[in-house]
Image 1 (cartoon, rainbow, N blue to C red):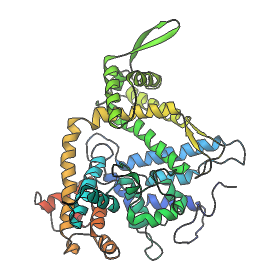
Image 2: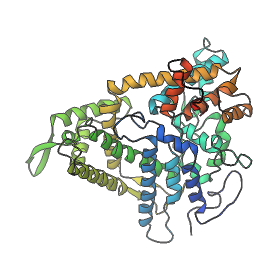
Image 3: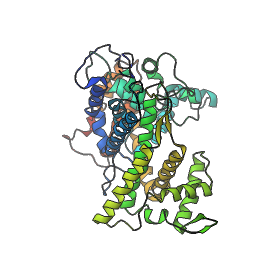
Image 4: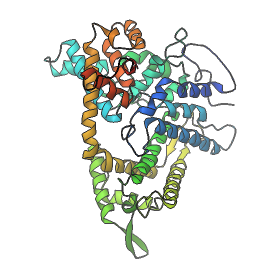
Length: 465
């Protein structure tokens, strides 16, 4: 028996092809072999993909999220106590995890913000509404949809990737796998003008409605169980593996952050954080407040103390075998903890049947671990100084491509020109698609070429990629 129906495994093309992999296994392979996935090797995770130091790229991050997705799904299967209970399919979850970051542009979240701002400015310019009322401008921006990495992921899967142009657009994935990639099942306008995340552009509503079933799009709509599991794996991988990167680099002092002293009073141990731990806790509270998440200082200290049982790092990373083994053991312990934090609430978990429940204390721990990366890396001047230039590159590229509308064949690759000719003249969206597809190094090289900073060579094909 299976928790999934023929409706879940249906493809928009209607074509049924069965082999030993199963439908979800086929989807997993289609994503893995796509050019969009290959480009993730050259895209920023936290630091630029070419940064010395063996940091995670967007591809290595995605591979680890996918590995967690498969193993976490298999763990949930062990919780099913009878043949009548079901857990998410491991192939399905792994496929969604492999796909979850396909839409990220060059330079990570800095590039995403730059592309959003540039798209909003250009759509107002195109509609001639720069000096119109604020309400009208906001409506134009919302209706166009701007740019959002998650929405771009869906667009790549259902439109931009090429597998068999005659049969279908995109990769022609099953309904359930596509649904598992949708973390925010709404359009930009559904979340109001201040929406920070959305998963569907207005151009792609037809596909989203097919995936979600009718009108199940909106800010209050539930995401599938598999999407929730994918999201949890993404958070855990980020909190564990990226934290490991910056401890090894000497940027995050894990050897001091989780150090506590104290005495017992009335049989109760009262932990006192080290000076570095106390400073980190205060910074975490401030950082979370900016994200409109309420944590007080004592709560964060308690979370950090609980984590100190697992983060047993007592010295700076020196590259020796002991240091490497300690870090790997810590990461393994954290991942095991967050795997065991999951339960199937009603004995069944597949798409919209039952619930995947995650222990709230584990969710708070992961939140705190993620914030360490923000306060020690992302919010520091060293990275900001890079991001200013990175955002300039992204904005300049979009402007240059958009200004070239009268002669698009001189710059845009043939697949984007084909998109433009078959999308009722939505040239701006095609330009956004192209800039978003670039790797970090590709964007830098093309920007240098187009601005005359470094003209490159005639045989260099980076301008067509």
